[in-house]
Amino acid sequence: MNRGIAVFSGNANRPFAEAVCRHLEMPLGGCDVFEFSNENIFVSFSENIRERDVFLVQPVVSPVNTRLMELLIMIDAAKRASAGRITAVIPYYAYGRSDKKDQPRVPISARLIANFLEVAGADRVLTVDLHAGQIQGFFNIPLDELTAYPLFAEYFRSSGLERPVVVATDVGGAKSAAKMANRLGSDLAIVDKRRTDNSEQATGSRVIGDVRDRECIVIDDEILTGGTVAVAARLLRERGARSVHLACIHPLFTQGAVELLDAADVEELVFTDSVPVPEGTFRRVSTRVISIAPLIGDAIHRIHTGESVGALFS
Ligand code: R5P
Image (cartoon, rainbow, N blue to C red; front, side, top):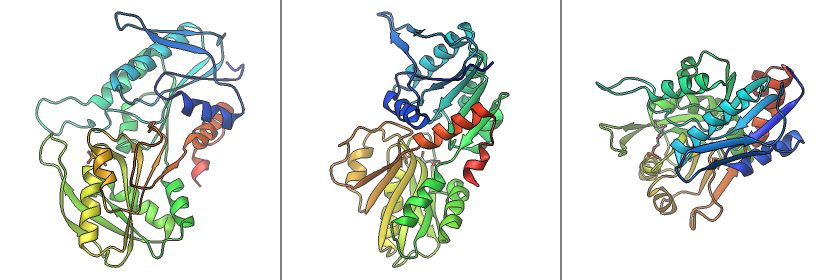
């Protein structure tokens, strides 16, 4: 193996893959990914990839099942074209919330997706902030999980907040929020959020930690309906927070999220470009995008040259 890197994109977020390639100072490879009239997806690489180190960039975002299928078929096509090594680059890994059997007769879909990727022929996976770190264990191939939390810490450090408090939106997110608080040298608070069923309704009523007159950074791994962070923002205001800054790694913004967040009493909404969000989506709330394209580009370079990926975070 090794006639150099080749990077290709599915249809999920081509501008993102182009940004990764700009960082790598190389062109995005030619690959047609389209559907026939019977909705069958077809893939055709327009250049020779025999023995190349191939990276297929595809966040699994709406329409989720189509984008997933595109990625699987791209992997199959690359394998049959004799690629030397195939890495699925998945900035957002869907189905991550289905990572355990916590009710009777339910699937573990995150594991199923891992199986699909392996069976299709992926040799490695490169992803960013999985919903739960243990999803790594669903793979029998090497997986590099990057994290964008340090980029958020850097952003908020430079934005001049006074004695900020990092707020986790539930107990599950406390560990990641604590790491960010450590990087910022700030305090940690936790919202006691609970879900009682499979509806997407989050409830929260308590804040653990002191937020009165403090600048609060609410950080979550993903925002779907916006309910979780909106509830957190309201609770923090009720408890006397001086300012509320919302941040998330993966901005899915599903139904109603845009209206809800536009109406929230917050200073700003910060998110990465792991999921495409068209410009002008929000009218009222001030938004800030932190690009993870350079981080992914650096990781691709290191995977290719056999350097440490972990060193990116030390
Ligand atoms: C939950 O465990 C996650 O960390 C997020 O809090 C959740 O996915 C956000 O969903 P929503 O925006 O619909 O409340």
